Image (cartoon, rainbow, N blue to C red):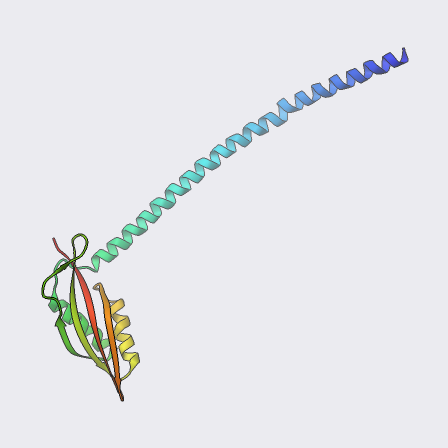
Length: 172
């Protein structure tokens, strides 16, 4: 009978352990699993919101950059304004414009409503630093201009630069 008593105690302990396990599972583990699933949903929701805000912010940045770029492109060719602008940049760089000519017979249409006008500019300076300053000021000028070709010749103490500068404008 002693063996039977120990068997019933063993069965009781197993049933009690299984009951305790089930109780702990439903009271502790299952709520944590549900909470974990809820947190995963919230994380994915916040990730989507962050991605959307990032896209909107980058779109706003692109819009600002485009607006800034568009403000540097006039609506007309304005060769007189180009001449004034180049002369102003030359004075700041302490170089002399010896020649400025339009090298284009007609207007060249780029993709879309943007057109370009090409000018050949010859400048003289006393050193390469002045020429470099002039080129840097073109890149930073209010009007959008690009230097397409550049030829620099140094003769003793004088430096000559011949370049093709392209300006852009809208064609309504």
